[in-house]
Image (cartoon, rainbow, N blue to C red; front, side, top):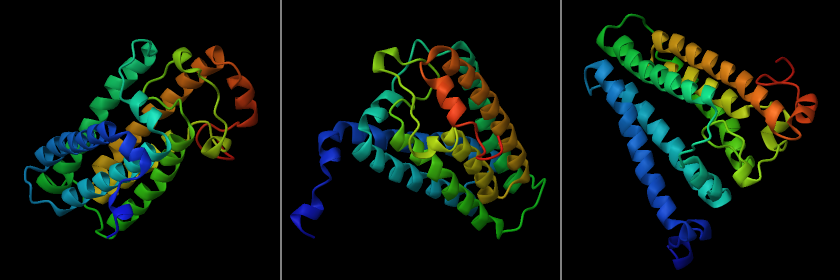
Length: 240
């Protein structure tokens, strides 16, 4: 291996502390998910559970690497706590957290401990495909939108503007499209129809959030109403 191959890309060298923080967060997220997942299963001897965590870790690592090279400012901003988050989004955050934890607990209970439902093993591969498809709009949104923070607020401190490039040409909330596909795919990877049902609840929450976010941006962000007239669809191109 040459010296050039051994050196990390320029973006990584400049943001080495950020890169380290990213790795720590990646490990923390995987650990956080593994607790309800394997607690629900009642055992660590669950191949689909480990396969899911490996898929998630690989995806997070790829996304983090690309973001640190293409949009490192967004990484910093997404990790900050915000005091001016809209009230409805604070409520959404807690509801989303509860439902996501329930998703992993019930997936383990259904697929391993109690076996309430059964799922064909071949659907594992369908789930992986749905996860990959879901990550395309998620990553596209992260690389395109410098204002894609984790909470809904008008970013007056960051020169908030309307973004209409990349996946935003087709739908106004591409990241939610990807997250929805990913959750459905995860339930198939884990082998749980109960988790698939909970994933539908996650999607309902995201749909509600898009409506509230749209209303906020129409009322408070200059140019967003005009953007909505051009990009008419919230989540499904050509339909809705």
